Image 1 (spheres, rainbow, N blue to C red):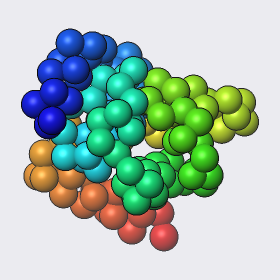
Image 2: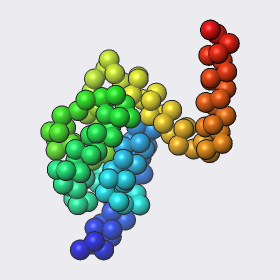
Image 3: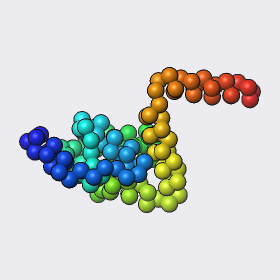
Length: 129
């Protein structure tokens, strides 16, 4: 059965198109232990269950400071669907999109670059006090 799931994902794979979809696809991939998840792949068709759904929502909450009800993932079980659900809130849209872009930039940094940025920021804050 796992081979069938991988085959189905391979046949219908559509890559994330936005920063938010990229972050959500990464979360789905991590929770489901899959190499990649397409934007239209259903979380539950990929083998996800309710415990893993709570893990997804926990990671979304941590990444975006958003509280989503569990029913959100049941109502919108794909990356594209969950992204649309999140972006329905006009007041949070710009913040969520900017956060997704920043998360992707941070993910591309090496450990040394992260350390340099932290040291630079600490030096700036020390000068301002």
